[in-house]
Amino acid sequence: MRDGELVAKSSPSRREEVSLVEQWARVRGRLQAEVGEVEYRTWLKQVALAGIDGDEVTVILPTRFLRDWVNKEYGDLITTLWQEENAAIRRVDIRTGPSRGTAPNLAEPPIPAASHAPPVARAEVIAPLDQRFTFDTFVVGKPNEFAYACARRVAEAPATAGFNPLFLYGGVGLGKTHLMHAIAWELSTKPRNGQKTSVAYMSAEKFMYRFINALRSQSTLEFKNELRSVDVLMIDDLQFLIGKDNTQEEFFHTFNALVDAGKQIVISADKSPSDLSGLEDRLRTRLGCGMVADLHATTFELRISILEAKAQRAGVEVPGKVLEFLARKITTNVRELEGALNRLVAHANLFDRQLTLETAHEVLHDVLKAFDRKITIQEIQKKVAEHYNIRVTEMSSARRARNIARPRQVAMYLAKQLTSKSLPDIGRHFGDRDHTTVMHAVSRVTELMAQDAAFGEDVELLRRMLEN
Ligand code: ADP
Ligand code: MG
Image (cartoon, rainbow, N blue to C red; front, side, top):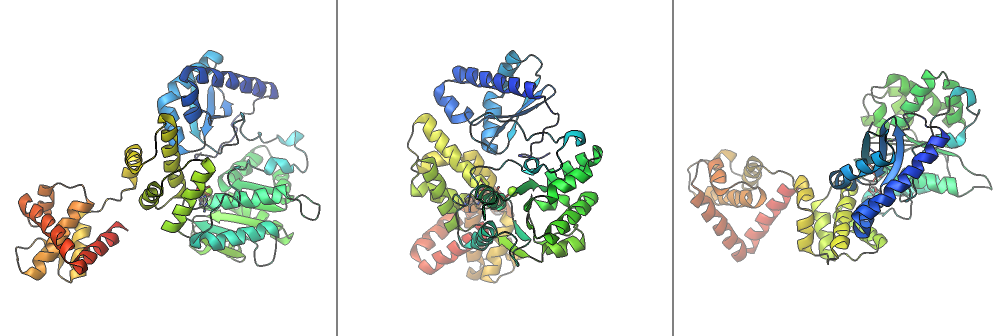
């Protein structure tokens, strides 16, 4: 099971549920008393109860950063308080999951056993939606405007020809799930023609889980009817079905039945249909025959807009310089970007300090280290040699001709700037040169960059190419 995909492993009775919720309320109260109001509000307010399985209670937090922090700082305390409240509890599992306000919440209702499952149980199919993931909170920019427009269109007029199925794809943390939830919110809250649209949203993993459960409890017919009764079926992270042939088969039939009945399907995956090798050909073909929309990697501008929107929503003022710093450092994943911002804001709240570039460096030191791509000296040598049109072996040769020595110095300079290697270490990579030679190269290039604008631009260009 992955983060954020909570399933009720056992099915507590209604009474057990109620008493669990009461216990949780008391644990929260004591937690608050133990750590004090400020700390509680900063770190613990968002902890939500997810469920219980035997002697293990699961609580969830909305971000990985908060989860790790709470685990490290408060894990033991939370466990102790739980055990004092309920002696049967051995372990508390702290993980990430969608936040649904601050009210205590239990995991999704357990799947009803075949005997008392209603013939059409629409509500059962609908997985909880994240309240933060709406069209209003989605920031549109060049890389995602097409996907956004398609999502809007489907939300306004599901099952329009040309938009069915809608297939959204892109890398991790670029907004696929956000857009899907936005469609689901829009459809399930706004009646069309006086009728409510029933939407089933679930991850492919959950789809498989439910399918297997249905097989086990011999209720596949109910499962199928349940799915086929909805107006819109949304399956998130379809790549999960790769290699799961039986589930794929079932999905394919459901898919066909729904499309034939004029229902809308929305799918997300990390790759385009044609690149999802490992999915059956006929399924790939059908997936690609509606609208396929790509969520591209974010641009600097989009990252800034997203950060601005989030900061505004959080009601904090973050200096432009700090936002720029974040947008430059964290480039691949909006979730990580948000996490870093949350952390800064929490820190500022906690210590009642002004947010500055220095604080950002300090607070995010360890986070950013993970994002610093490791540039190697070999890469630098190769790029610089290419750029100056010399052989890469000249980087370690003894030749002192200007047209060779200068590029070599540039490479040494960049190695000093872009890696964490020591001067002697760098020297070793350049034909076993002495660290004083490297030092000299660094100061010479610095000097030249200040004197000669064209040279300076050249070096900057190289740096940018290497950093990307
Ligand atoms: P994916 O499903 O593609 O891995 P998510 O939809 O879960 O990514 O997005 C990760 C996080 O980044 C979510 O908190 C989401 O709200 C946020 N996010 C991504 N793109 C945007 C955007 N364009 N505007 C606002 N928030 C975004
Ligand atoms: Mg997702």
